[in-house]
Length: 269
Image 1 (tube, rainbow, N blue to C red):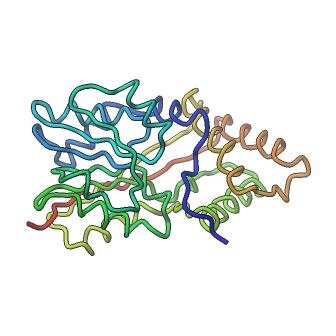
Image 2 (cartoon, rainbow, N blue to C red):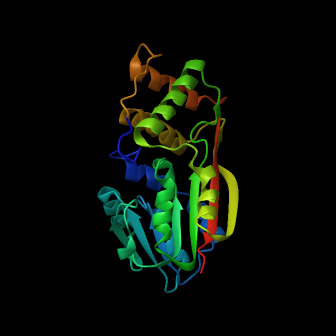
Image 3 (cartoon, rainbow, N blue to C red):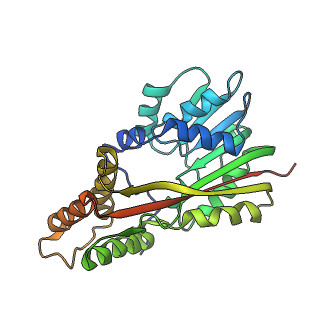
């Protein structure tokens, strides 16, 4: 039985993990591609920690403002203490519920959010869209085949990775294929001037750097525990699995990559 949707990577270190992995120059490039402009009122839906909200705030100056929306009070506290300033507001909301009280926005940014809502993703986009002013821009960004593009594992590690993902889909509504759905969501909602960009979010080969290693192993540590995963092919259980996964990611022969799909559109006026 599937549990109520929950944030897969929730842990005591999650705000830190999310913060340190942000590439500010890349976020700025993506937002400019999407059409962000000075003076806009912006919503960063599912804002997390969040350095991104501060980057968006910089891009809408002068006279623009940004509202960072997230369901976690812990991450919002982190965001407010690290990035709170004039022109930025952080609010706690459930994005599956009505958001009319937030007012209207000229630009809404939804990055790496829908992958945690397999069964609700379209309804969430529809709900968020109601906050967008006519002629406003909605930008959706998510990964595809996440994290299933890799080479160099043993057969049992490959089977275990895929079984974990399958159970995450069924038990906590995780969607490893969220990215490929984004265009159709905007199309079905009648958006205009839709554009799509497919790029590489992450490619790892040869020596892995400390940040990528930390990020990969944190996922290995946290995600399976959320579903009480049983390591049937590992006599030593989680510890044996963890060591093999760590060996795989540290192996210079290993290859892994993740596609990023970005989609933008204008709400009909």
